[in-house]
Length: 412
Ligand SMILES: Nc1ncnc2c1ncn2[C@@H]1O[C@H](COP(=O)(O)OP(=O)(O)OP(=O)(O)O)[C@@H](O)[C@H]1O
Image 1: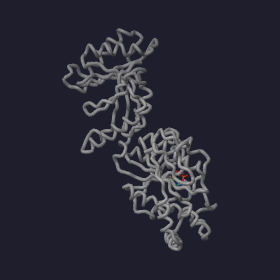
Image 2 (image 1 turned 90 degrees about the vertical axis):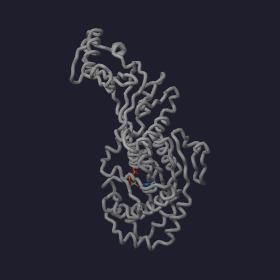
Image 3 (image 1 turned 180 degrees about the vertical axis):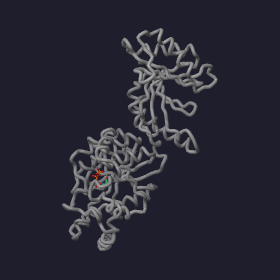
Image 4 (image 1 turned 120 degrees about the horizontal axis):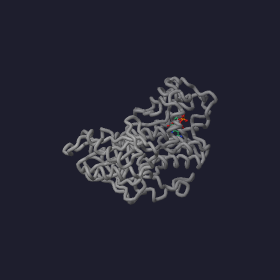
């Protein structure tokens, strides 16, 4: 099938109101970044719409890449012709002729006259194009409901578009148009999905990962870097803050409060993430919590943990079932990496039965009794190494090692 262009459709919000130019700029940049591997493709902007000229690039491959662009509602590969009746009929006959038609292929024409000065209404066009098609291809049979072929024709002033398919995009808001947030990224299944959902809602994210060397390995760290690399495919590039958490975490061990360890750890994570957020100008913290999934994700736990920060905590997965989360993880490409068996610091020193109902006063009293906690938290922030990761970053080759930060210069 020969197509000339891809027609891109966006949510209404991108087309109207005072945010329009900001939204458009963001979408345009995002499209440019995902289409970088297709040098012949050319983005054109016309009458508030975006099109991609194929110039020989594969429409399937381009549509696959464009499914990473937030705010994009649907994509149609189109043939184009001048907005003149003869030309539209000729192009339609040729276009349908490229389809494999069996003995009785059901079809219909759905025309839409957007450019009102065009002399034939949408209804008239259905007949004016349908009749020559029936004459040219006697195997076609008109069927209004669920035909095998629906030839759609959109008549605009600049040109007319003919197409069959409307391929769904991911929707949401253009990247970064709703502010900035810190994503607490573990190596698990949930937090990368939460990060993707947050980006889809227009948030720019920066990832924060806590590791406890030597209890957690270099491989565990590289796994999180790889997850960040995959997520960066949706953002162009992402910052990853790697926080040394060993000192803070081990200070909770052996104080006779084993059932509170996870609560204490999570609160410390939030305090560190809040400081990093302030430095980076982020206004929220995103986590992969899903209500009731584990002890630290009961409502009572979330309540006590969440009070360690003044920033809003966004939990995109809070009401999702595990199966739904896994399905999204597979779709966005993070699942295979998430299930690699490298340990997360949260699984260390964890008691058999952590509390599901921590008491805020008790937790605060325990925290107040811990020596040098503020200094340990400060040291963790100071020791944080920040990487910039892009889709083509080679994680194992240029990665940081356990002795300190070795960051490949190309990443910046
Ligand atoms: N080492 C870590 N670094 C950064 N954030 C973390 C870390 N461990 C946990 N988190 C954050 O806390 C949330 C809850 O973690 P937990 O391990 O209890 O649950 P989970 O359901 O297994 O989540 P995930 O699948 O994302 O690991 C995670 O989704 C993540 O946002």
